[in-house]
Amino acid sequence: MYQALRISRSEFVPVRNLSYHVRTWGEPAPARPPLVLLHGWMDVAASWQFVVDALAESRWVLAPDWRGFGLTAGGNVDNYWMPDYLADLDWLLDHYAGDTPVDLVGHSMGGNVAMQYSGVRPQRIRRLVNLEGFGMPTFEPDQAPARYAKWIDEQKCLHRGEKALASYSAVDGVARRLMKTNPRLSQDKADWLAAHWSAPRPHADGGDRWEILGDPAHKIINAHIFRCDEMLALYAAIAAPVLAVEASDDSLGQWWKGRYTLAEYHERLKKVPDARIARVEDAGHMLHHDQPARVASLIEGFFAG
Figure 1 (cartoon, rainbow, N blue to C red):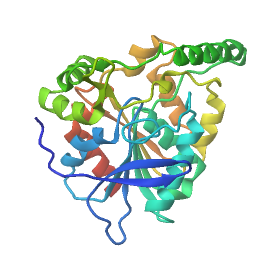
Figure 2: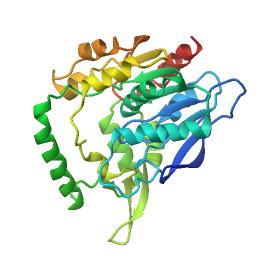
Figure 3: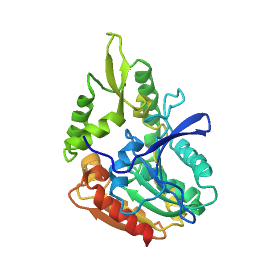
Figure 4: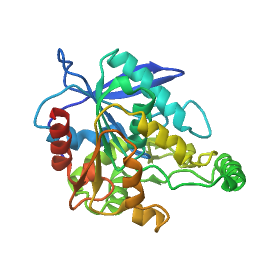
């Protein structure tokens, strides 16, 4: 199994009505901002271990489990909203950083949160690295009625138990699932990650099954249509330099089949006052697993800028 080089600690922080789990590495240093890492959808804070181990320099690193993921409870809700992540992050930075601007990294959903938050609180971010946080395709207002209807229908499915996450008889089943989703993930990393991405829970048959540490309510779509004009206004308000990192595999092309493209994403990035783009070769969407050393090098080089 993968052997972590830098050992993390777990802390729980009161955030609004939740007890937020935060994984931390290193110690605070005078005049050095914390490095804050935000994981993506259906992921956990421990997912950053490979990048943290690849950092050339030891830093104080903070990585929360978003509400409803990992060891942070969801608060008994039946759907999740982007503004909650923004508010949660603000509370966490109050606790850990006070008025000190932080270095922020976000992957996928975490990258989208990081970009939007940096427009809401530009004074709190020193520099920002966005790993494949592309946003969504543009929606038209006349799509709203069907969107609301789908949101209601999916909630009914959730309450009928039709959106449960898969469970596994042993942790190695979780590892196989991770490797199937990401063929570049090595066996040792998959075994290590599976033990943090899931946990054994008692089942009706009297035995334990390994369940993914994610709330099925995350599978419910957002009720509101994605507002590209609103997102671009947030991009324009970002004061920090931004490094937008994308993998050599075209995730957008795979997901959206031409409905939303890298060229459109690059056009949106022009709204950010100071943004540049980097590419990681031989990597897919989980580029922090595929090429952690390259991702760590990009992060450190940019933050040293």
